[in-house]
Length: 199
Image (cartoon, rainbow, N blue to C red):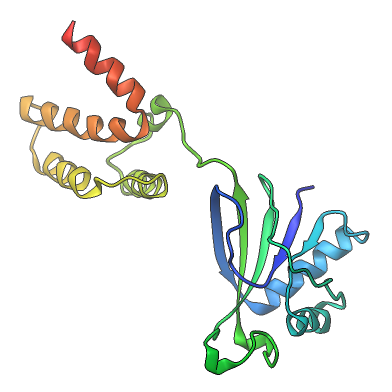
């Protein structure tokens, strides 16, 4: 069982890849309650809650009061995060958490991995890159992994889709499109391919 961390803010304490989904308050508290049922000794439940009022809200909703902690959260590959994020943290709102109610928070469930999920180049090209789902997957993965030339990729793909048949123009555009993708997802393979083409 991987560790579940309870946090009072979406502070990313480790370099890596995070996936966060906003959930309903009841779902948030139910997930804590279920975790406590499955792990009553708390071996896989760590609290990083820093404010007493936040801990009191969790206790009121779940029957378990998380211990207060002033340290930076330490998370590991595969861990789950349950996050309460106070909506109003402005100075006018006073000390965070002192007068907060459950409806004053946004609630998230997240997961953390150390490395971005990068498929091998051959696996990536095995999907239908012209289907909407395939295009969406490539776009999301490209942005997630720090791609900066998305306009050029989308422009080339648009030209490719508008080119009739599979003639020389289409083949050239297709090569340009896959080259742009490979330069990002598999730059070492792209360089090897470029060097071989010059021999």
